[in-house]
Image (cartoon, rainbow over all chains, first blue to last red; front, top):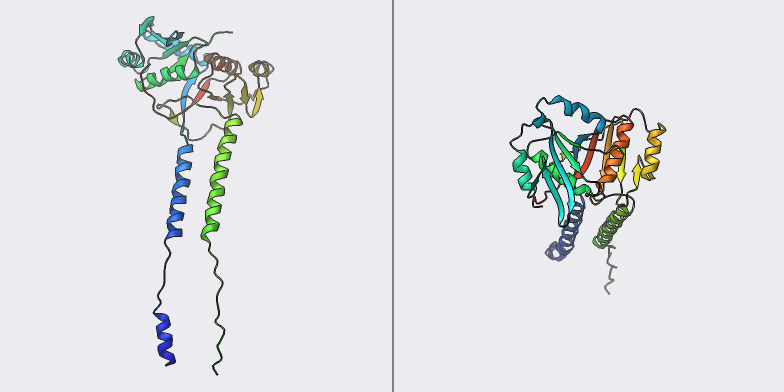
Length: 142
Length: 141
């Protein structure tokens, strides 16, 4: 009789409550969503100070190749961009004009002092995307 | 007469609410740390998807952060551009610094960046690394 009573106790089985487990999964999900959203990747755009630029300007023989100058100024509706003295309609237009140039051509960005840093970086980004990594800036002598 | 044996009851401890609270605290501290980062001199970097990944900061580099109001943080010290130029003129910049690592706010006037690059040039630094956020931007003007 004792053995049958013991055997009946074993029939209850193990119960697993899933709710806390699902709770934990959602919490982990929220945690990783937050960490991924907050992280931004940083990168580097290389250039040179004026003391290093003189060498680059003199290395090209052809005056046309020597100066691929991009002028950036502030205008009433944002920024105005000029390539070799001629206005361009936008960054896509600038990219199409830069693309045919040889890759080693230095791109000289001549930005007005009141232009925002983001606008200048945008032009440098377009230059690199067009295959020109050699980008330098004009710096007034102050 | 039957003597009933006292049944042994084991005390159970539910860990789940405890772990819940721990994660809530982690999320709370993560959020507050992010807000503190914004107030302590971190800047909104300009966007450039062509920026190359930073593997490691060059060991002998001059680190300059250009804040939105035009002030600078040079190797951890906050100063105005005039003080930085004076430091360069007086030879206060590490003579072994070979690179300028420049972290500038996207909305700052380019004039401030030019001032920093000019001063770095006077200090004998040739190579400049402009830090940017590797995000894609629309090409429309």
